Structures are given as structure tokens and as C-alpha cells.
Length: 313
Image 1 (cartoon, rainbow, N blue to C red):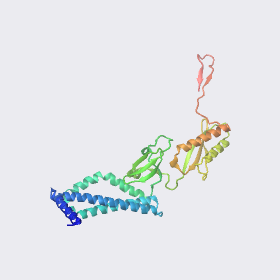
Image 2 (image 1 turned 90 degrees about the horizontal axis):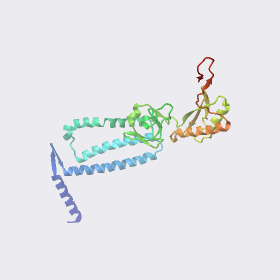
Image 3 (image 1 turned 45 degrees about the horizontal axis):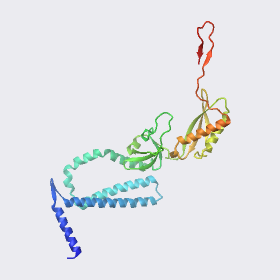
Image 4 (image 1 turned 60 degrees about the vertical axis):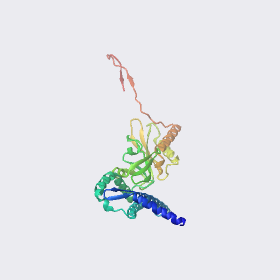
């Protein structure tokens, strides 16, 4: 007997022994051979699906005619189709009789449906987001009031914006300016207001309030504010920075400096801090004073007959 025939004979005997080791589960007989076969088939199909998805992703990345949202949507739809095909192929390959599962399939399906309700909802929400292309990888967004992304909800505070790094099956991976990754469920993006700063354009306008004293040259102060903004490399020259008087306050003339940037993911607070510091330096050189809140107290002499002097604020 040759080595090949001996190996084949040993393999056949092993299969017969594994088939002989079985247990009865109701009307269905479960053998060791069936369990091992199911495990081997599952592993092989998993490897085949992973290799197929890797090849499909490689081909889609080489196609420059579709954008990131279309590519992610195509990958998800193909992954779902491959998973369903692999499951049906495995059932047919193993010869599993689905009628044997009819006894508990209804109850199990109901339980699984309730358990996966949120997961399926997030999956469908993610596919809808990709289909209408309202949110794409690389977009700069703010969800709701920003609290879900660690932002402050105080009046006048800067919202915590984030960049969409990945749209997954269950959640969207958003990276904020703090370097933190937030997993926001897809359903939340469908039910809450979302500010997409990159939907039509990446340009974002920044507003800054600058008070100027009444006894200063307002036109010179406005010119210095605009020059300071233009000197910052992150601020766009088209449209140009502008400054407007928005109110005559109690102690200052309130101005609003408005300018545009194209990289909001790089931060808003840092550029405002740079511009404020530049305005401070330019105002000090020009002798322009920025008023600060104060309270004046005057001592008035008491008229004749009053027991004590009175103070007037």
C-alpha cells in the first residue's frame, strides 16, 4: 500500500469514528463530524469573505470616479451581500435541514429581533446617511448642541467640532479637536440636528467682538483690526476680513470682526486667541484703549443739617 492510499485510509477511518460519536438533540442527530465540518466551513468562508472584501476595497480605492461616501456605501452593500451568500452557501454545503429549526425559529427570531433592534436601526441609518450623502468621511460636523462630542453648552462658547473619520455599521467615528474619538450612533445623526460645516464648502466664518473706547479714532482701530486679521496665514483673503460697529455700549463702541477660514478642524479657539493677541499689540502701539468694566464712586458733601455725608454711585 502506498503512502497516499495509507493516508486516505486513515482519514476515512477518522471520519467514520467522528460520525459515530454523536448525540440526539430532539429529532436531530448531532455528530462530532458535523460540528468539526461546520467549524472548518465557517473558518474557510470567513477567510474567503475577508479576502474578497480586501480585493473589492483595493479596486474601489483605485477608482477615482467615485467619492468617499459612494465608496463606503458600495463596500457596505457588498459586505452584506457576501455575508448573506456565505451563510446560505454554508447551510447548503453542510446539508442542514432548515425544517428542523422550525420548532424554535419563531421564538428565536423574535428574541433576536428585539435584541438587534438598535443594531439594525443603526445599520439602516448608516446606509441612508451614505445614500443621501449628507455626511461623508472627512466632513466637519457638530451634533446637536455639541454635548454629545464633549462640547460646552454655555452661551457664547465655541462648539466642539469634529471630523468624521469613519462611518461604521453601528456608529460614526468622529475625532474632535481634543484628539478624542467619539462613537456617535447612526440613529442619533438621523434624529438630532447636525451642523455639517463641510456640506457645501469647507469655508467657515468666525466672528469676534472687540470693544473700543469712545475717545479713540474708530476708523484707525477698524483698520488695525482688519490688518491684524489679514496678517494671519490661516485667514482667507477672499472674502476679505471686515469689521462693523454693532452697538454703542455703556463704556465702549462694540465692533465685530468677521473673517473666513478653510480649516475649522485645526481649531477655532487658537486662531481667535492669535487674532486677539495681535489686536492687543497693535492697539497698544497705536495708543488705542480697550475699556474694561468699572464702577465710579463719588463722594458728595452733605448739605447743612444732614447728619452724615452721602455717597452717590
